[in-house]
Amino acid sequence: MPKKSLSVAQVKATLSERIREVEHGEPILITRHGKAVAALVRPEDLETLERLRAAGPSGGLASLAGGWKDSEDLVRILETSPRIAQRHVANLD
Image 1 (cartoon, one colour):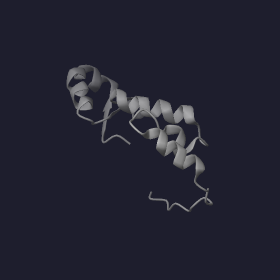
Image 2 (spheres, one colour):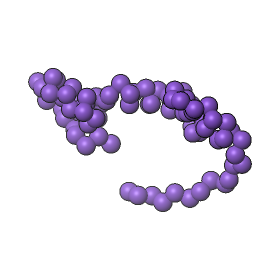
Image 3 (cartoon, one colour):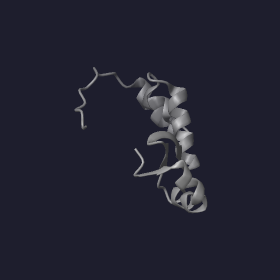
Image 4 (cartoon, one colour):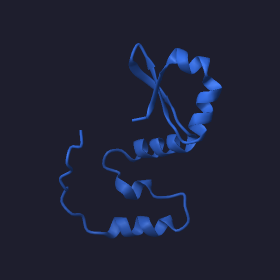
């Protein structure tokens, strides 16, 4: 979750400043009446989100690899590695 949460009115009044913050890597959650309605993020973060959505819940890491030098090797390794049962992940909340 983004560190900074601001209302629509606050973002509207200070949009240039908020864009500078996002350019420096700080996502901003935008709220209306206390409820999250949107977020300002860097284009790279949006591209990552779109790739995650396209991969779907069963896409896995191999579906995200790509777009950098030698990433095809990573895809090949991940696709041929044996699958292990789901591991238990502790709830950190």
